[in-house]
Image (cartoon, rainbow, N blue to C red; front, side):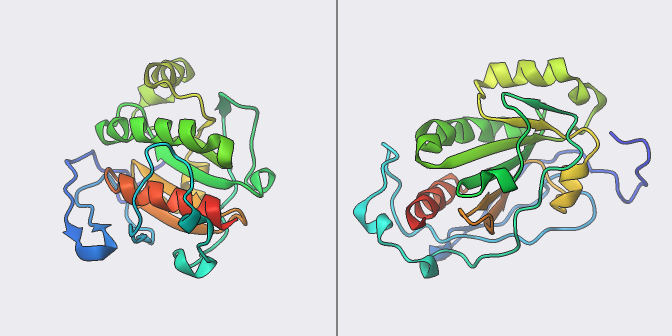
Length: 217
């Protein structure tokens, strides 16, 4: 945890997440996630199509227009101030042009993060060959989460093989105006943010949007 944070900037400890479903939009309202002092915009995608267990894209998805997706937002910020890259050479958002990119903020002792990891690992296994790149951004809450050996052990235990950036100085965290663990961002192939989700849940919605973005080109 950074020594130069003021009390208003310091992240609160984790609390239990609860979610309420809101109709066809499939929106999940997250309450009690660890946060700093400002909420980023949360875009919610409609989950109107079923998820394929094989990960293949249906003919209907292949015909989706860009208008069926959540509106394009700002460009995905670049990775900044990364101490070390694990499972990868250094990456840049610019270098990932043409890919659908998921950036996943997490820290290994966070129970909410731990519960999301099996889904993220599965998405990597199912969709990497189709053009999805997942990048974990490991930003610590506690001092022991800064240790590279501890982070690598956590990657091994969770069977995480996709790239992970060690963001010990919170530079990338701040570039994304993030305040939460876990928090994922998803961009289209043009590098524009189309979706973000805070906390656990919404796995079906997220996977459906991954499929839509891969099909949209």
